[in-house]
Picture 1 (cartoon, rainbow, N blue to C red):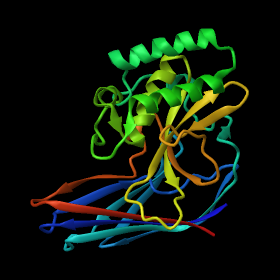
Picture 2 (picture 1 turned 120 degrees about the vertical axis):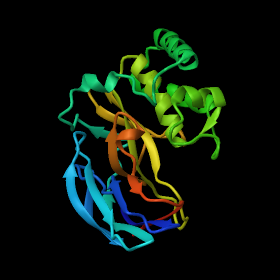
Picture 3 (picture 1 turned 60 degrees about the vertical axis):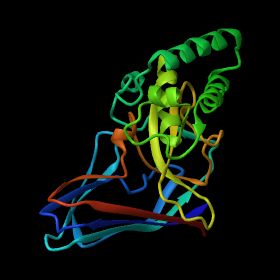
Picture 4 (picture 1 turned 90 degrees about the vertical axis):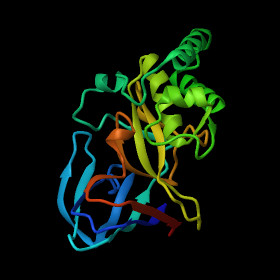
Length: 270
């Protein structure tokens, strides 16, 4: 499936800032079943000053605003062709050792609730010999049962354990909780950011799901929020240990006054 993507982010500054630098994880990855046909990043009110690759293999751009501008717009657009592989990405594709993906992070550190869920899943594993995929899909179901999808209850700094306490959250929270327990069970697991096709619907944020390394299959995706493995409606942007590694837009601003940020994402099937 070929996706046409237009991702616009507008920064409105109350006063002209002295300096603004933004880091972008907004270039789709290219691999066996995801081909980037074309992709451009335009900056109105600023310029791309560097392009590099991080240690996860993600493309990173640094953007600096023009010094006399109170508004900056970043527009990412292009076409990406995705083949449905039933959620299977395949062999490990990073220079980082798989063992590192078993470690807890600040956002996925298990507390009492996630540790108990880990114990419950360990018992489930002992009672069910249907394989790793069955176990991981069951974990996905249990995470969603404990963290109801609801916007406005959490934010980008909410940890997995905090989301369990609140009992509500969004895709980011689902992924962090899933990663926490999957790692407790001994799996290598990672965070994925990307786009999900929702035909003709304007979105205000990108999507997130998890991938777990399963013997004989490699990396396998799990969209906890929607209860499925990713198919050809999903476009992968970046992977990491948690959200902190894949933040679509993050940066620093020097100057006084407030800023307003508006995001508009349109994805359509070609």
